[in-house]
Image (tube, rainbow, N blue to C red):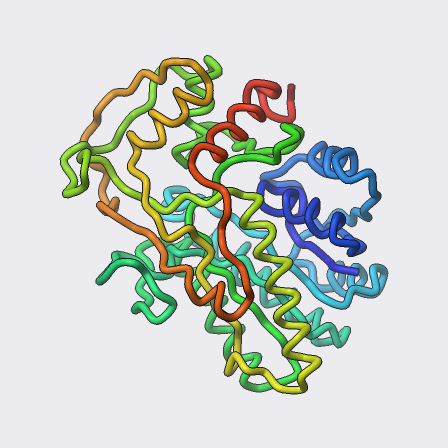
Length: 344
C-alpha cells in the first residue's frame, strides 16, 4: 500500500493512475484545498480499480498517524503543498506553514509508524537563477521565492533525517515544468482562478475562457526573444515516481544506500522550448488561433532554464519519452472535453 498525500492534485492524480496500473494499492490523503475529489473518481474510471480516500490536512499529525496505520502503508509519496510562486511572495507564512510544517508533521508520523520510504515532490525552483546550463543536481541551490525556499528547506530536513537514521529511504524529485494530461482526457490540470503556468493559460485561451495570452517579454537572449523552459509531460513525470520507488526498494534489498543519503534527481526532458514554441504547437494541436499580447518582462523571470536529466536515467532508468506535440495534444484533449475543468 502506498499513501499518496495530495493525491487528488494534478501530478498526484496522474501518479495514482500509474501506481494502480502497476499493481499497487493506493490510499490518498488530501484536504482538497487546491484539488477536486472528482479527479479521484476519474482515476478509478481510468484504471477500473478502487483507491482509498482519507480526507485530512498534513499539518495534523494525529490524522497522519491514523492514516498510516489504517492504510498499512509501506511507503509515502508526498505531493501535498502549495505551489504558486507569486502567491508565495504575497503570503510566505502560509507557504512555510503548509509546505514545511506539513512535511515535518508527516515525517514525525512516519517515524512513529516505522514507515521509512518516502518519495518527495520537490522543484527545480531550488536552483534559482542558473549559473550554467543545463542544470545538473550539483548546481548551486539558491531559490528566489518563498515557494522555492520552502522546497529547499524540506530537502535539507530530509537529508538531515536520513543522515540521522540510515533506515530511511528517501527520493527527492526536482520537477521542471509539468504539462499535458492523461491520454483518456479524463484527468488534467485544473487550476483555480487565473492559471499561474503557461500551458493551462494557453489552453483556456484556446477553449475561449480567456481572450489572449500575455507574453511577458520578447527581448530575452533566446532564439525568438521569449523565455525558454523545460516542459515535461505529466505522464512521464508520474512514471518517474514509480521508478523512484523501484530504486529505493532495490537499495533497501541490497542493504546499502548507494545514494549517500537521498536519491536526488532532476525530472525534465533536457530540452527547452520558448513561449512562442508552445503557442505554435498548441495552435497545431487545437486547430485554433492563440491571440498573444506582448507585455513587459516580469520581475524575477529568467531567460532560459532546462535540465540535465542524465542522473535520473543513470540511477533510476528513467527518461522522458513524450515530446511537445504529445504535451499539447493531450492538454487540448483534456481542455476541450472539460472546458471548465472538473466543474464541467
